[in-house]
Length: 443
Image (tube, rainbow, N blue to C red):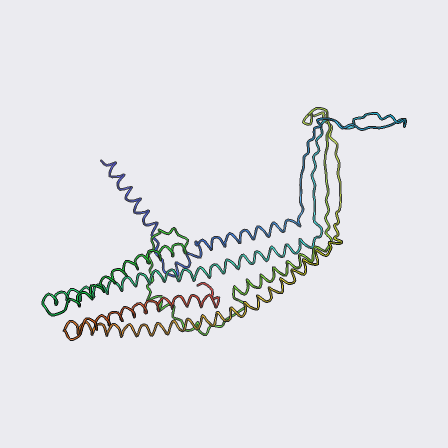
């Protein structure tokens, strides 16, 4: 009995612990930090940097000493015959100058002395590393914006469900009173039917919004790098985020083009085109390398190479190799011309990037200002709509207004509630876009 109880308690403890492990509480700031560390895109970007570092070292080693060893074993299945005429009488005699088996072992040390392509390749690999680091920085900025939007969408869904449920409570009360009035002959059946339609619409919207909320949570989990079924508890509210994200100082923030990550990426793209042109030009230069070789060789009729009496013959060689390109039928000239055109195109794209980023910053500021203005208007309109709807409720309860007037006031309220929630989300989203457009660091 005791053993059964212990097993039961252990199982409960495991299930509780496991459930706790799958639940994550996150503020928006914590969600951004979590995603930058764990999202799929940032992990992939970090791996790209690792690959780039290995590429730099791989390219560097081309200019460092290289040691290679080789062992060759040969066995003649049929020995070659050499014909010689020693007496000059026209009669050739057959001779065998090789033994049936031989082993040749060599070690070669080689060193590249000069190669223009190697020097350019070394520069290119370092540029590739810089591009990978900048790509990671860009990924982190994009991840921040994605998390802000995904987090905001969850809060909007939760807020919308809360509003719809409160609206349903109010409508159910009115519907109940309308039914009572109809039963007592104080109101018409049409009044009851109108509020039943509203009830059906509200309940249908609640179910639809709950499904959207579930999808929003899963999308947030994907952005965070979590399994989609991970349970999340968001500790920030929509109202607190609106307050935190209303910052008019951003509207006068100076746009610094040279610090913008997209501009740096465009500059590096131009640099890669320049290096490609230099690479093609370097192929017209001679290359010089040196090597030293040491080897040993043995011959035998039988396989006796591991026996002590086997004789081995050593040899060594020192050499220098010079390769001079002379004529390529103007092929190299055509390749250089192509790279020059590509470099000109990169200059055009760089200028386009300057103008596009400047416009994006101005547009983002305008949209952010507009979102703040719209929020203030939506907040004011919501207060007015709530007051109008409450007055219509009182009038309807007292029998001095029709259900049509109350329904109009309710529909107006529902519209303003939706506008208010969307206005809150827009402030959060447009601020994230503005921060990226200004290339502001992640805080």
